[in-house]
Length: 127
Image (cartoon, rainbow, N blue to C red; front, side, top):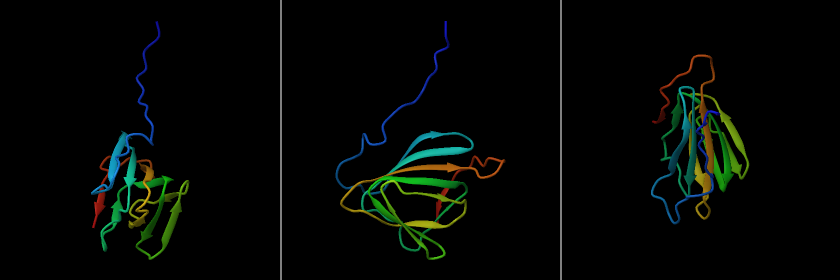
């Protein structure tokens, strides 16, 4: 008899709260020592002025729905539309400058170690 394999499944576009959200919604979909996969829901949210994400892992992020802008410490701005993605290196300070207020932004973010020595202490420090 075959071994039963347990798998997680879901849909990134289901169970999205209606109406305004006080804060962005971060939902962990899966994680290990070397990676974290999360769904992020935004609706008119932005990182507070003068605060920056400074993450210990690289972040590959794709905007699945909506429009958004990310700002980087060097002053550059990335305007994202549905389907656009970025691969942000670890410790590259960035912030969410703007997300569309009239439509839901659905993000998929994969935080991963860039080198051979995994850092299991993922942090999302806003400074």
